[in-house]
Length: 132
Image (cartoon, rainbow, N blue to C red; front, side):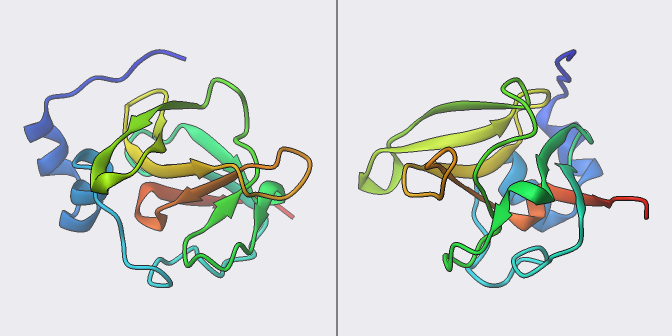
C-alpha cells in the first residue's frame, strides 16, 4: 500500500473539526458518543482520512469501553503502532498504515482468537456496508 502524505493544513481543510482533532492531532472522542459504538451492520471499516480498509465487522465485539472494539485488523499491514506515553501511562497507539491517522489504542485484554482489543474512535472510521 502506497503511503499518503499531506501537510497538516491540507488535512485541516478537508476534515470536519472533530475528525481533524482526533485523526490528525491524536484526540479522543467521549466514550459512548461515537456513531459506530453500537453498530452491528456487516461491512468493512475504512480509514476516514484515506479510505484504506482497516477492520472487518466480523472482528468487532462489545468491549463495554464506549468505543468500537475489534480483535484484529483486516491485515497485518493495515495498521501501524507506536508507543504512547501520554497521560502518565504507557499505551500502544494504533494508526492507519497508509496515512498515519490516529485511530485509537490496542490493549491486551480482548477476546480470542487474538486476546487483543483495538479500541478505535468512530470519527476515524467510515463503514462500507457489505452488499447483500
